[in-house]
Image (cartoon, rainbow, N blue to C red):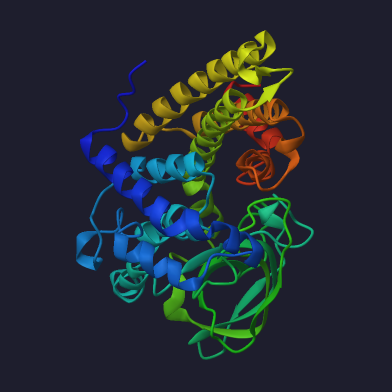
Amino acid sequence: MRRTVFNEDHEAFRDTIRAFIEAEVVPVYDEWIAAGQVPRDFYYKLGELGVFGIEVPEEYGGAGEESFKFQAVISEECARAGVSFGGSGVHVALCLPYLKAYATDEQKKRWLPGLVSGETMFAIAMTEPGTGSDLAGMKTTAKLSEDGTHYVLNGAKTFITGGVHADRVIVCARTAPPSEQDRRFGISLLVVDTKSEGYAVGRKLDKLGLKTSDTAELSFSDVKVPVEDLLGEENKGFSYLGQNLPQERLGIAVGAYAQAKAAVRFAQQYVEERTVFGKSVASFQNTKFELAACKTEVDAAEAVCDRALEAHDAGELTAAEAASAKLFCTEVAHRVIDRCLQLHGGYGYMNEYPIARLYADNRVNRIYGGTSEVMKMIIAKDMGL
């Protein structure tokens, strides 16, 4: 079926991204995997290409687009090539919406031009050791100084994607204790300069997949954060986090669908070239049935993503609908990628084959952005259950 979710501008952008990936990423991707991160200067190239500025208002150096579909194109093209842009997805898809929604004009003038160029890379620090998805249980504190000029930040964060290369980190911290009526009260967002005294990057975490994303532990020891770097209003951070979750989960859904589609492509190429017992693997009935079943699931996931993308651009995507899209697409990708790896036989277990990397990279999709179990809770609540 013909897709109608993308227009000519999106497809022209797709051509640009595909050519960029082939020229700048594919030839060196194995080096990035070995290093455990992309080189810092790669982000300058993305800035020059205009990737970071698509959804940034023109007065701050961006293109002023409001559509999330351009980010979907990037996800599809990276999956198609079996590569990743490292932690830059967090920079744009997660951090930018908070800056656009809650930063003052003065803050936007300070931060957005560098975000667009890649000179100021952003990350967001929510999760803490021992708290997981329970953000209201965070222990990191930010106490206002007696003279009211700065906050003193203390605590630790973990699983912070982009944490090694980040120049600014949106840190979620307690500026007040939780109230008796609402344990979510008292959380604020601070945009912390990573060059601040007392700010430290700990271990770069050794993950199962997503090897080119610089995921790290962070710690804060009496870090002074100017009050001018408070994002939004004090003690309202939890509500801010909730408002961006639908887009975050949509992005994960699109990425998972794109990975599943790429897995089918990789598997079909492999079975058409591989021979056993004097015949191509593609000629066996089981292979045909498996790939046909996988393609059917991918087609369904594509329809879900496209409908969700349209709803998001129209400002109509609800939290429950985003949860449903994430749940469905990540579960589809899990099944499809596993079956496509099986069709590769022993070679599917070798990291030199993109299907093996996809298998490892995909696993986290059912965990971050809210686990599949949390998605089911959100959907059930929306059903009145």
